[in-house]
Amino acid sequence: MVRKLTDGSRVAVIGGGPAGSFAAMFLLRFAREQGMRLHVDIYEWRSFSDPGPKGCNRCAGILSAKMLKNLHELGLEIPEYVARSHIASYHLHSPFGVIDIQNPDPGADILSVFRGGGPLHNSGPDIRSFDGFLLDRALDRGARLVKRRVRQVNTTATTSIVLGSDNGSSESRDEPVEYELIVLATGLNGGGVRVVGLPYSPAPTLTLSQDELFARPEDIQDCFGNSVRVFLVPHSDIVFASLVPKGNFVNVSLLGRHGPPNVEAFLKNEMVRTIMPFPYKRSCGCHPRISVGSASGYYGDGVVAVGDAAVTRLYKDGIGSALLTAREAAYVAVYHGVSRDTFRTYYSPFCRGIEHDNRMGRAIFAAHYRGKSSRAFFRANANLVRSERCEVARDPVFTRILWGILTGSYTYGEIWRMATRMQTILRLAGAFMGQIKL
Image 1 (cartoon, one colour):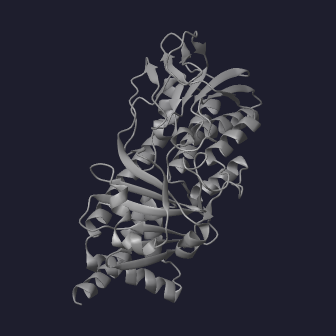
Image 2 (cartoon, rainbow, N blue to C red; image 1 turned 90 degrees about the horizontal axis):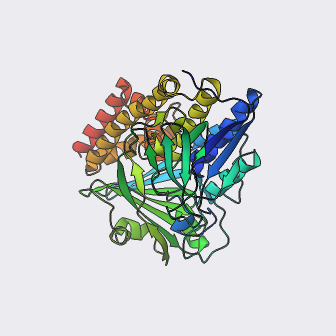
Image 3 (cartoon, helix red, strand yellow; image 1 turned 120 degrees about the horizontal axis):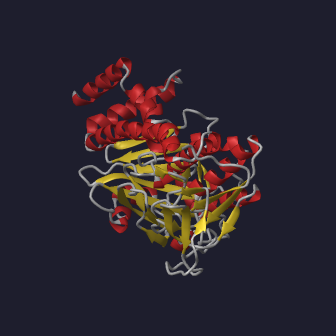
């Protein structure tokens, strides 16, 4: 039997981060298009204005150009009081040199933001949270905030939730609250919710190391400008390492293949010390988990997961994936129904498309990881990017490939197709052989 939302249906969104806010806004928008009123409750017990890990969703805080473009569908623009910096370029650092990668799509902005109220030890001005901004917009459009932790989701006889206590603990004697639809937008770092009656398992994860460094904004501006610094550390476990300017802070994000890298050791690296010769203070740190696969059992009768709770893009643009999965799930719920079969028919193929794209991403990052210790490979890419900039290339393919890998502005499928063109392969091979002969 197809289960449908009707006028006056009640929806619970568990989690007030980007995935939850996007889900609420899209549900309310699509319902209005259908002439239908929905009562949407967002369950989020935290305050995103709190400094430190308590109010933060623990992310480097890069908003891709594609995600910012998709925000326009909701009539949203990121205000300047939320944006910490406008990113115009990436500098890829290696012991073999530096590749200056300018934005190949100048009209496509990239922003850095804070997900919460800023670092725990914040000596700077008040910081406005990106997640708080989105949640406020969802409330403006008709959602209701319930500051309670959800302890359990029931999907057996009825679709309902069981609440935890007001102080965030899991204990409660409240009766279950029934809803026609429950949206799991719990992410990976906000504490788990037990799901009864659905074979739900969260996505597999890896653990990052993150830190926020406080320094004088003029020192950061002088050394970074509007550029993110990314580091290739040869013969190391590090998959990627980045420094992101955020006004009077610099975000450090490190991912290793077999565990979170040591931030202090990374900051002592000669390449990093050259970039940051100025004094700074470590203000906040955490070890967030990131998804490296897909959840299982992420939909059922009256229940659907979005964002990290379902599937997200590998390593990059998790907020963009939150928007896309929330939009798709909301559209299916309003226009097709909320039964398990409906989500399997209309929502699951969309999520499988992200999984397929991630498989290409794994191949791209495997090649990137193997090539990071090769002087010839690095310098071949550096020369090709430099020549594209000097010649004002009509199609700066090598710039686009690196820009897409670093920023998440293109799908991995798009990057793969650019990288596997015969002309691209021949040009790279020629540049590589030229370096081998030196």
